[in-house]
Length: 154
Image (tube, rainbow, N blue to C red; front, top):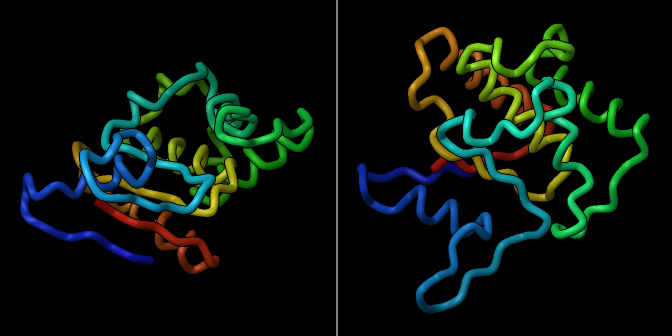
């Protein structure tokens, strides 16, 4: 795990977005592993599908990112494994709109995990969350790291 720390306005989120390929550098060069996944500050900006499992599975077959879509069975298995990794297997059938902010953030993390990217960028994961949801998100990330994953927090 690597963390990027700095004062407000120092450019941490900008760097994470550039590493994720969401921003073009104005000068110099930038080289990052591909494929990569990013989880941003506001989980509502990342919800694509109405159901939790469908939302987690959505990014798995992104041909523009060089990903071959898995079979429906494989997509379900990967989505369920990712939801289990963040402690949300019990809400797999629920609409995303019914979840708390922390649960939505963990759904976003699960979606990134299901993509099996070689680099996972996590930007300000606990911003706007209450204390309980902050701990739930941090514990989910801690569990991923313990299991051999990695994270960069901007």
